Amino acid sequence: MLDLIIEPDEPEWKPKWQAHLSQFRLFGPQPKPLRKTPYKFSYVFECEDSTKPHQASITDWELGVLWLKDVDRLGDEWKAAESVKQKFF
Image 1 (tube, one colour):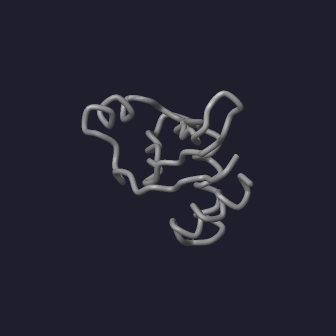
Image 2 (image 1 turned 120 degrees about the vertical axis):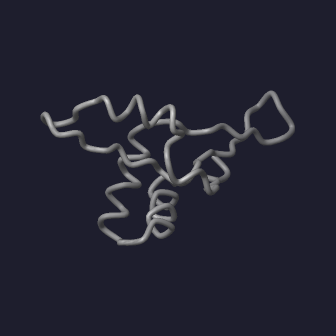
């Protein structure tokens, strides 16, 4: 892997998605909102059959959970994103 790219993303869910998400009940009868990660993560890598690097988005929920935990720990969204990058490597 060559790099982990962090790009800003929409801070809130799309209205249609929010309507669907608000129907779910996590951890009991009271709705607990799902926090959206305001960043997109993708990694850059090389492979043997190409002369240029590839970039692929990461949509893994575990990366989002890591980011959320780092936000709680560090108290800053961007520092949390940088922490995710350090841990990824």
